Length: 329
Image 1 (cartoon, helix red, strand yellow):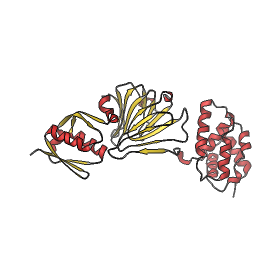
Image 2 (cartoon, rainbow, N blue to C red):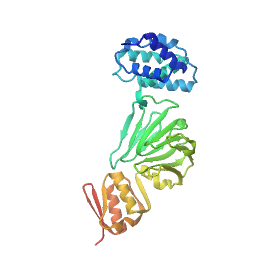
Image 3 (cartoon, rainbow, N blue to C red):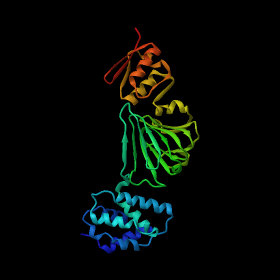
Image 4 (cartoon, rainbow, N blue to C red):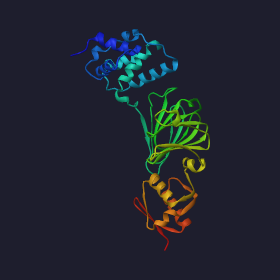
């Protein structure tokens, strides 16, 4: 049995003025999720007449941005799409109601429609975001961003893997990087590196300033980094710490160079597996403790292995996706 149209309009009004109960919110969500209730949706003129508290310009811009993104999917019924398009033209006083429509049409707190850029093993890509920010994406990494709702005050990207960001100046303070699902990086400056891998998340600041925090929004779990510092989240114990950073060593990959300083072969093996997807084994356990200092191309495994062979006087056998390190005969 369909609900009374007057009751549905009353729910919209209560949602706008903040007096709606949790049970009524659930009813409104359930109504909007039904595809055969188009005739019961409030008319655009009714939406415009619904009183709502005034909002500042920034909040209104965010609401209108969300509405623009919602109207994009062609799968929505025509009347609903037309209603939402017309709602975009409402005054700021009615924008709170528009926001309610948007949020209820995205059940479960879903992310907006995201553009995805990914790299395979041994490759890199440079991406220019809508505001002019450039992102250099390392191998075996994924970048996502909202390509339809990119507006001041709501710039967000999601990174799994490693990326170097050079943020456009007018985006400072309005740009958020989600590193995996463990850290949020608020950009207060310009150039920084994010590496979100299984064992932990690393944020290295080259210039400017960034604020790094855990998803719980607790200020006690937030660090403001200065150039030459690094925030590291240990996935094992859940701790976030501040450390000194060798920015050349940690971010030279973006210039197609990998800098090793007293790196053990065990460390280099981890890099090879992460960067190239190759499995490394040691024929003699003591080999894993050998140390190497030098610079190699970041995306040429054969050159790296050749340099290691000559520098450490070892033998390395590479077959398909398997690398075996052995003592020299």
